[in-house]
Structure formats: C-alpha cells, structure tokens
Length: 433
Image (cartoon, rainbow, N blue to C red):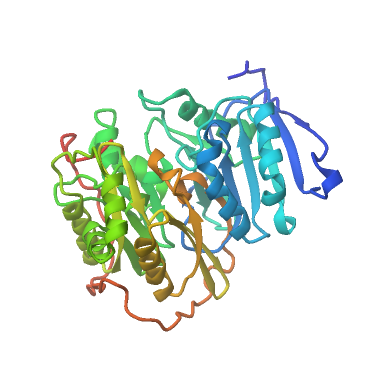
C-alpha cells in the first residue's frame, strides 16, 4: 500500500474519456493513489438486501489473467443489464485498464450505460463481492459503509488486495466508507432479504478462538443487522463455504435451497448430459458428509422459520471446491417487474429446469454463461457485486405470473419468524473451507 501522508490526503488523476472518437463518452479512466486511512466512525445499518429495489451500481474486478474464463460471463452480463445500471470496474494496472477497454468498452457502455474504470495499481481477484459487503443505513437511501473482512492466513495476494481496493476506492471518493473489524466474513457467505440476513454457520469455526460465541453474536449483528439467521445443518455446520451457493431468498417469505436429489432426478432422464456431468465429476472424493442431506437440513431450517421453500438443482465437486448452482444470482426489482440474472452451464436439462422454477415465482430470467469460470469456485453473484440499490420503491407489490408447479413441490410451515440466536457450534462442527 502506498505511504500514508498526514491528514486525509486524497488524489485522483482522472483521464479524459478513453474513446470519445467512438462515442463512449460515459467511460472514464481513473487512477487512485495516496490512500487516506480508513475512518474509525461508522453509521448504524444492516447488509444491503439482495431482494429489494432497483440495482443502480455494480462493482466488477477485472483480472486479465482470467480473460478467457470470464469472457462469456461479461458478454452476457453487459448485454442483459439494464442500461441505467452504472458499472465500476477495478483493474490491477494501467495495462489492464487498456485491455478491458479494448475488449469490453463498447459492450460495457451499451445503451449509454455509465462506466468508470479504476486502476488501483494492485493485483486483484475477479471475486468483487467477497471482500466488500455493502451495508445500508437506517435510512435505506443512505449507504452506511462496506464491511471489509479480516484477512485469512491462506489468502493469496490478490484476495488481500481486494480488501485494500475498498480503502482505495473510498479514499478516492469512488466507494462507500470501509467498516473494519477483526472478524472474518466473506461476502459470499452473506445473503439478505428485506427482513433478515442469512450467514453460513462456518463463520463460527472461521473465527474461533478469536471470538467467543457471545462476542461473535454481537459482532455479526453489529455488521449485518439485528435480525440474523445462522444457516446450518443439524450438526451446526455448513453445506458449503459460502451460503450464496446454496441458499437464495427471493423475497421476505420465500427462499430457494439447492438440492442434489433434484439434480440427480433431472439428469436421470438426460443420458448424454448425465454422462457429461459424470465426466466433470471425475476425481471427486466427497469428505464423508452428504451434501444432499445437509441441504435438506437447511431446507427444513428455513421451513421452521416460516419460509416457503423451493428447491433448485445443485451438482458439486467436493475435491476441487466448485458447484453447478442456480442459487448464485442477482435479483433486480423494478416496480412490478422482478428480474433474475441466473447462471447457466450449457447443461440444458438443469439450466431449463432452474429457469422454469424462477419463472414460476414471477421472475423474468436473464441467463448468464458461467460455464468457464464456475470451476474456480463462483458464479454471477461472486463476480458482480451490487453496491447500490434504489430502495425508495421497494414496497411496490409484485404480480406473480401464473405458471405450473416447480419441478419439486415446495413445502411451507406456518410458523412466525422470530429473531434467531446464534447457534453455539463448536470449532469441530462440520464445515467446508
């Protein structure tokens, strides 16, 4: 990190538009330097909901090393996004900004979209969400801050720099105020609807022994908000390291949970795709825990909290730590319209079933190709971090489209939701890392 100067010194070098000649006047190239220290004050708030309001800004991290793998995702995302959504693209170097602009400038700025390319002069990962958990203030129109987790010992330099990038963006007035803590909690392990915030139970083991159960409870509620649900299986562990890979709240009453049984049933009727998936899973060695049973436990937990639960197909490679998942989505709510940006893998039977389940709940489905990047451990929500939403119209009613039942019937239990105390799991509880 550059040397800190006294006071809150901030300097921005803003270049002229990179492509005025081809009409891309909304694309700006920014270099941020001379980083100011993160402030010590913060506003009260909670995690920005995934289900409410219009998406107005998305943060991306561009890594030219992954250019081939990320290309199908970018192609679909830039084509499918609403033109009103601003893009902020963090690049690791001046050369990378030029490559991004050359390869993606026209597509990113399609429809007159506002795009800002930021050179942070640090190598970063493509996972823009994990080191930046956006929070809203008590007034939902006021973003409180972004939570930047403590680093883990096994972090590569790129992941550590993802953390530094948030301070760089704030110092350059390009991002929300960082909220620092010694807590380790990645953005993929947090999802939220308008009422509750869901965190994977592996957060307990990841922060042991630095936090006692009582301290962890208090810190999670300070960061995420008071109405917190720790998502767990019957042993107190987590099915996967990030909750957004298997759990998706779609509103304040309904959640989608992954199901390996559903995926197996679908593939049983699609021989060629089943064989392809089996080839993809070669070399996998499950660790003894049944992912399907753990996901069923999560579904039961959500039912016990009063949620209507639908299941989505999931296929997992335990050894290489990747999933074919349809839970890792972006939800955009524009008045009476609900849009879901859903990952696809070119496994038609699974892709089409997942899309039909979202459509049956009233969503317009926009498919994003993650077939090359998903084996690195993530999908669309991991890559595209929603950093701003317009929540002023979040109370609009939703018209559900008439449709057939989901492929697997949902279950519901009429139990009123209450604030859930954190499960006091021991560090030996079943988790994945």
